[in-house]
Structures are given as structure tokens and as C-alpha cells.
Image (tube, rainbow, N blue to C red):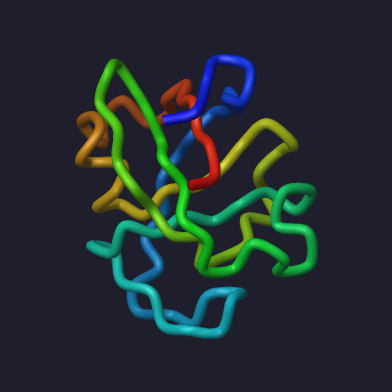
Length: 102
């Protein structure tokens, strides 16, 4: 895990890709541990297929960048439904998470 200074603090929501093709060019499932980065972080696809550690409430999961979130602000990201649910109940809707590239 990254040191505190290397962590990025973001608002995480979730989405349901439903098998659609993500911005990185592959089909994505709701149960996949994938995420969509905001436009600034996505950087034209420079981070496609990179792994990130996402931490919430002392629980860490590993997700793969597979999509772009054009509606996310510069401090936002979208987790797949499965990834979000592994951190918290979907009814929460928005989490404040720390993340870092592996």
C-alpha cells in the first residue's frame, strides 16, 4: 500500500457496465473489479488495464482501469457494482476512498 503522501482521495460512486465495451476496448461486467477514471486521470487511456488499490473504511480491494467516467469530476471515479459492493452497501451510493496505482 502507498504511503499517506502518495494516496489520492476521491469520491467513488458505482455503475453497471452490463457487458458493454469500456473505453479501454473490452467488455466489462458488473461483477468485474473494474473502475472508470475521470477524464483528467484517464489521460486519453494512458492508464488502461493498470491496477489500483482502493481503500475504504480500512478495507482494500484491487481494481483494474477499464473505462472512462466522463461525468465524474476531477475528484471522482466510478467502481463497478461488484467492486463497490465489496467495500460497502450499494445503498450508501458515494464513498470517500483513498487509492493508489500498484
